[in-house]
Image (cartoon, rainbow, N blue to C red):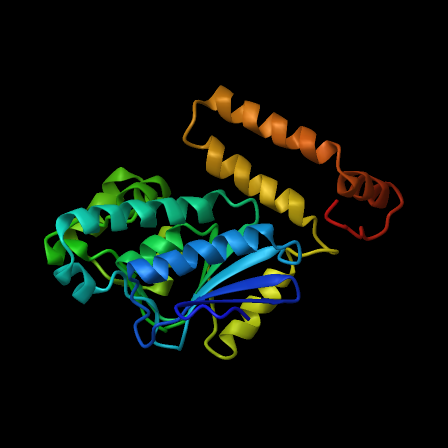
Amino acid sequence: MSDRTLVEYEVRDHVAYLTLTDPPANTYTHEMMRDLDEGILEARFDNDAHVIVLTGKGEKFFCAGANIQMLQEADPTFKYYFCLHANETLNRLEHTPKLVIAALNGHTVGGGLEIAMAADLRIARKDAGKVGLPEINLGVLPGTGGTQRMARMLGKSKAIELMVTAQLMSFDEAKDLGLVNQVFEDEDFMGQIHQYARQFCLPGKAAKAAGRIKRAVQSGCDLPFESGLAIERELQQLLFNSQDAKEGLAAYAEKRKPQFSGN
């Protein structure tokens, strides 16, 4: 475990956990974003980390968004650069070629949802809280990627509706909309998350291929179709040259379970 105070980093069974640690609400400051940024980079370079799980400390909140006291006290120039760095941090998370799972253990609102939307998959704890982007109630907009990511996930009209009405919804409602991938039962939520994440780890799953699937989607979807196909081909070529691709094809031909190495 790292000595960071606001974002803990720990690897268990090839799953890297990044835990927002400022309970009860886990609101983020510039200091927390810097810790998160460092944790993302650490997970990138950590060969023992095949999958990343992002979650919040405690059981009440995943994250309630930006720290309001910090925003009240900061000048406009600081707030602009705070938003810029937060954008860069979440882009770094989104572009890291390892699968990222947001484990929504409690309320996920405002900037908390913006952080969660930068993950590849969102798994929520049943009846554990609400989700939404209510920034309009503060006279501002979702400024950590929320307007852009939600529109890409749900379509422009639905995203605008949710943001201008400041609607908060249950995790089950969010799942019906496609904002949350799955809702797990409350009992031993993080244990279920660990088992879910483990399925994408070596040696049972080709973690490198999972990461490249993520990269092809995240980098290609906002480009012209032909450009997205070009990215897909280049990433496929990298995988074709890997030992894991050879192992996968051999295991299929020999009718056995593959044992991937990450090479």
